Length: 229
Image 1 (cartoon, helix red, strand yellow):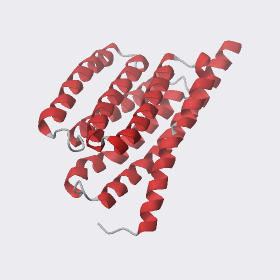
Image 2 (cartoon, one colour; image 1 turned 120 degrees about the vertical axis):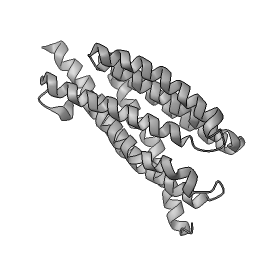
Image 3 (cartoon, one colour; image 1 turned 180 degrees about the horizontal axis):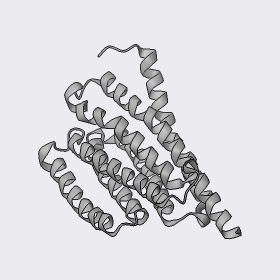
Image 4 (spheres, one colour; image 1 turned 90 degrees about the vertical axis):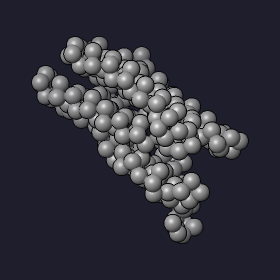
């Protein structure tokens, strides 16, 4: 794929900007920490893990680039387990909670099978990403259904888990096709194709981190207002 050098430079800057954007919700999380409910504290742990993975990825890219795919295979698995736990604490139906436990075990087995047998460690684990997207979007939709049934939240845009779930649906629905075709449409040596894919991912990440930041902002305010009432 032929892409102008200025556009590649812009894409690289956009990717770095998206990586730094995680610091905004993370900073709000630490600021609001005493007033955060347990699911949002888990979100804080997930963001810390994300930032560490980004830093480690930069080092691996410099010194051991052949390990980079393995790092993101691990990230995908741990990321999914974080969200499983968040929704386990958030969704109230016992049947759904039991289902999440089975999903966590089944997904872990499938992710390891994909890493070591189906696709291997030398490319993106696209099968795992598709399964991850389907499962997490499904859990987010279950949370939306729970909100509709309970009807005690009048301003959805100020509900932290509604914002988190909106970010989940946006991110995973927006990137799933990238991961489906990434191994087929771009050769390992095709830097330009990979950069376009990473840039599209970064654009969705910018919106995702903005929604996470709003979630932490309203989570702290909600807890504070309840304690003063």
